[in-house]
Length: 340
Ligand SMILES: Nc1ncnc2c1ncn2[C@@H]1O[C@H](COP(=O)(O)OP(=O)(O)OP(=O)(O)O)[C@@H](O)[C@H]1O
Ligand SMILES: [Mg+2]
Image (cartoon, rainbow, N blue to C red; front, side, top):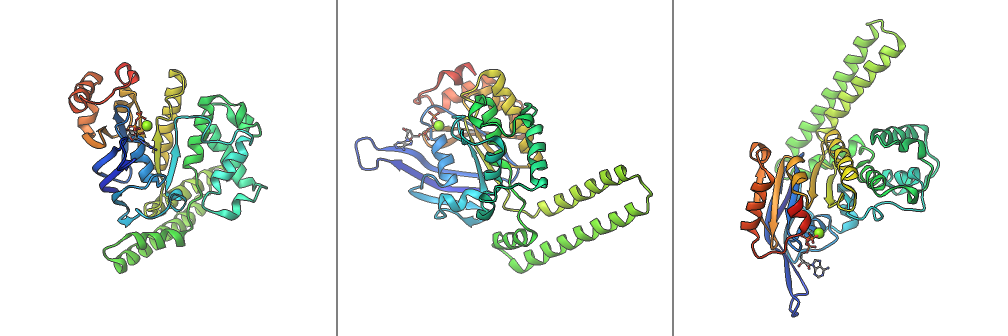
């Protein structure tokens, strides 16, 4: 759970150009929430994401991640918990490096030794190829080409992969962080996580035993074995509180409409697959309605509309524009929001 409590952020405080970018903002985002964020130019959307990621420091207020106060944790230390994609397709990848080199660096994030380990293991290479293939852009055949040669949409798709792929933390680390993040009853949390891991291991062992008695072909056995491993990973992953939060700041705004919708589809697929908590800023009202399970509208540094679930599904662009006009009558509004 990500919680923002009473966040205030001024720019140029005490000068004639003083601006309040975030004005006593409160927000709670549950694990697995996919929140779309809309609002006029200057409403404070990017500042909000910057404060969450730690690239901008709030003047006051608390940022809690799984009940732990992150307010004074610097951007670098917060990085493993957040994946970011910005508007500019050039900003997320390194143009002079190949797709594979970019992915290798992202994969090694938070694990300094692997950054310098340029020789790739076969396992990693297979994983990268499969990930790039899942984008369905044919880029799996261009893994050794420089990223600078790719189109903006292709680069954003690679950036999305880079922002979301990571090596699952070791079981020891998952257990440690689970207990660390449970502020209330640590002894109980420790017992619960240990028991869950033991049960998952036992279930895996039993399934493998059963599998051996089934007399399947080698290929069939391989398929079943993969299913058993996936079930095990899922059971463990439920206790992994350090899963990333994906922060998207108009990541499709610089792309043509067709490419933008392809990148959005990819985004949704990645979010579903990894069950990521996601915050996506967009000026396109249709996209804000179509994607995610919750929509918030910001105006002058505050959340002025917060709609989720069934209520969100019923929203229309006209409806949203009305709400927008009422909520932000004094704000500037971009053309793309009106046209969206
Ligand atoms: N580094 C900065 N220095 C001074 N003022 C800033 C800075 N960053 C943001 N601001 C101001 O804070 C306010 C909120 O800006 P922010 O970039 O968060 O808006 P936004 O909602 O992302 O707008 P847009 O839709 O145009 O991207 C604006 O008035 C902006 O001018
Ligand atoms: Mg912005």
